[in-house]
Length: 313
Image (cartoon, rainbow, N blue to C red; front, side, top):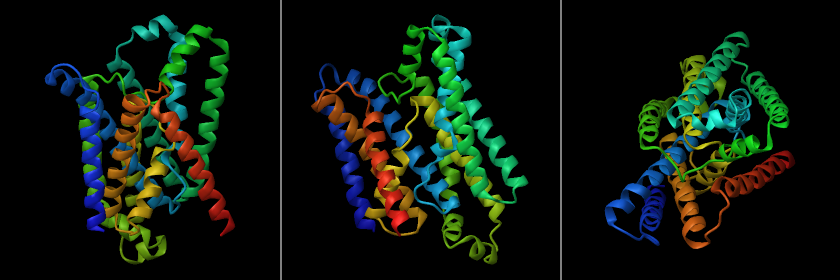
């Protein structure tokens, strides 16, 4: 397994070098500052989403679920749509990136905290009921978003479309620093939970018999997941199927249940997917299609394959 992780790490380095050097023109200092910010954003989002997906799949004991099923992406689009609907397109575009980032990140994090803490207490650790509630809330958010989008001006609708997909071309350095600090802290807590997560993988009854405070561990993992998803989504936008894609590949490449391996493997594959994919789209094929659209297409197909495969079993 360590040899496979080393090979993945080498691929990550190759992708980094290709992204920073391929087609680079101008002074080296400008290239490093311009592409370096985008590279850091790709890496931060990739690690955050892969880690949050591993956490969510472990506590739900289901390998086809991702945090996006709880309605995070739908809530993000709803917040931006509501801002355009009530403020107007001109006033919305005049808002600073810092304001939009803080509002969306805080709203998603607080909503997730309220959902997780309330339902886990009232349903006595019934995670499936909590997930169903998240699915219903996601459907409600999408309905409200569709209702407001039908009532706004077409030009203002174009503003919403621009922010509804993940974007890595314009990342403010200040926003990246704040997001890196918050996500870095959450990633440290996630790494410290790796042994508890290994125990949870054995099953709920086994984990309880081994003395693990399961309710506390699940709530802590959900809180970390909420922070990682909220911050990464507020920074670049929603990427619904990235987590499912990279974690599924990580479990194939490194088929072990140790979270110390899965965390690293999924982070490496996520970095390769984002950095390598962005390099190919921007530098080789020169496509204008956002990378998130391609990832959602591949990830959606993988989700259907896993769903059908699991149903047949």
